[in-house]
Image 1: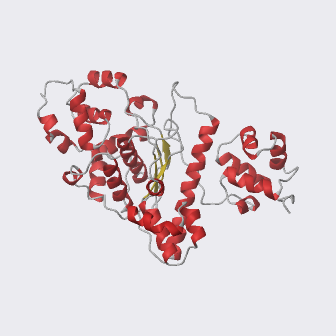
Image 2 (image 1 turned 90 degrees about the horizontal axis):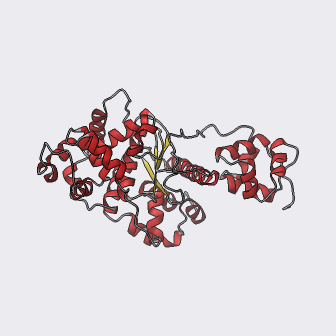
Image 3 (image 1 turned 135 degrees about the vertical axis):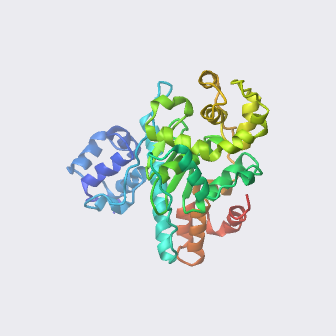
Length: 386
């Protein structure tokens, strides 16, 4: 049986390969066949064996049965690529493949969540907030703060770092946004991505970023969702001239949400700084960055927008600063890592499905990579307060 041929649709084979952005050569290498053999399958001149098709399905991250379809699934929609790369980075084909695999994985998790809502007869929260590039960034930022009922006096009491990151993730999840985190994608390949839908929109952040960087990416991608603009981002403020209008706009709104002008201008650091001095010390910027849980550059950009520094000082700082790097990690607790990867909203839904016998223990493992026999540890961490 292992040698039996799988009479698949060659067009589906081509479509699946292209969705993960693999060339014939690299795809053949990962499937362990010669490029000529893969080309023969795609041309319909030959067929893979059942065993080979299982390997293809694993490499392309597609269900086995999909290769027998007459047409691609209608729900699949590639995300728009907003990324720009300069001479410092040469994006390899394998790096792009790793990213596309992760994006497919999280889009599949969204579909699992939708199916579970249906099986549990539970209404899905619709994300109602919408915006437009025509709206002033500060106006949309204010609208976002009101929609999420953000209280910056309360935010100021949260410890910077992971407590702040988890606080913001839970806040976004409370409005029906699935928040996922990837660890296998290099930071220069992707800082964040989103699937902008009215129901169960998705935000993906990169654990290779600093916690402050991830917080900013959360809100950058949130603005994409508000604009209903799917996308993949690798934006840095210092690369503004490279990017599309929408990326610059998303950063402006995200910065305003996280660092509202009234709170920034009333902070002790800003109040103590002479109004006619455009230079800011690293210590001052560090204190403000810690207070608002963003990078020094985001703080300085806000100060520039508010007229408290000069373009020359901002440009000089931007050209000479050393970007914060994530502290090295030994890997951490497995369950904490799975919670960070899958997000509380998704895991809570899968747990409901398991306890209401809509899922088997095997399905629970497939959906979470956590054994059903170890739920006590998962729940203890998942339902802990920030």
